[in-house]
Image (tube, rainbow, N blue to C red; front, side):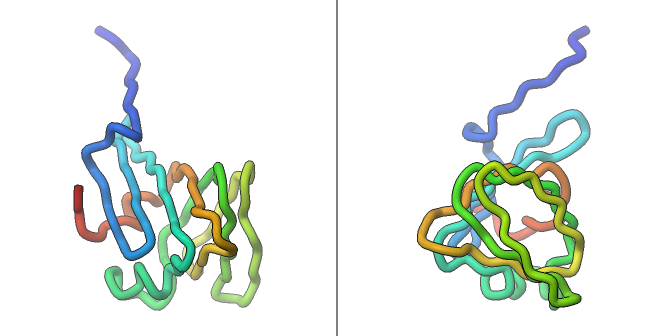
Length: 122
């Protein structure tokens, strides 16, 4: 019996769309991996907060950014940018928004299921 799995994010049938965002998900090895695209103008507090109804994003994130850049603001006021080539761990209790004109593309390794419980759309 094979002990491996292969899934393709671009062929994912599980897609979430929010204003300014598209998230493709695959379940693999008991976890979830997501590819996310956040367009110019995307901001968690404007585009996701109304869906999840929490003051801050309460999902932890472990991400790799392929292109684009975004800024994160933690509850304590700390702010930092995440950009191409960065691997980042973002704790619960944050807001985030795209910086600049380039679409942010990245991969989410944890927290993706919590962060994207919004509407399913093809």
